[in-house]
Length: 67
Image 1: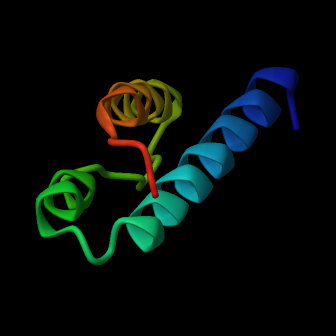
Image 2: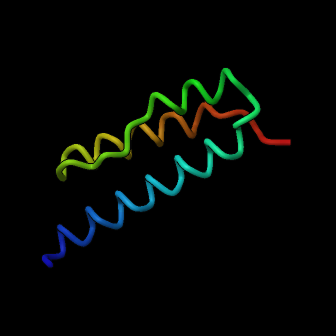
């Protein structure tokens, strides 16, 4: 596997993990959960993986603090 492919796989895995954790944490907050459900983590190609990671970063920045 080339370095670029390794980076893409790791970025994809971290994005998937973060989105899943956030969906679990905010599962009882329907407004936040709805915004998280809109995130995609299919990772069809390198550019798609980067775009999904950027969308997750933006969503992360808008999440309320968990109590």
